[in-house]
Image 1 (cartoon, rainbow, N blue to C red):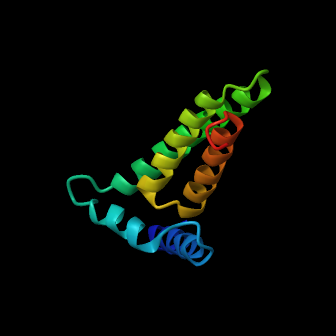
Image 2: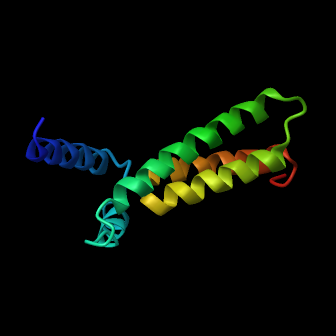
Length: 113
């Protein structure tokens, strides 16, 4: 696959994420503006770190949910981290779901009652 074809595929995928509401267009564009000649792979590195951290956090969340009793404070902390990293790349649907789950955790911990 040549470089131009690769760029087109990335652009198409990115546009699809914008269209579906997974990425916030303005916020992701701000991230792209931080990329320059000195750091030409900045966005790729940030997104790669996001996916790596997200996988780790999802695994931690799954493990916390398997324990009894559930430590809602720990779950809240994981969701706070996940929401923050999602916010940093403009992953607005993930951010919204994290907020809902954090509210659920707070309610389960007696804070929302």
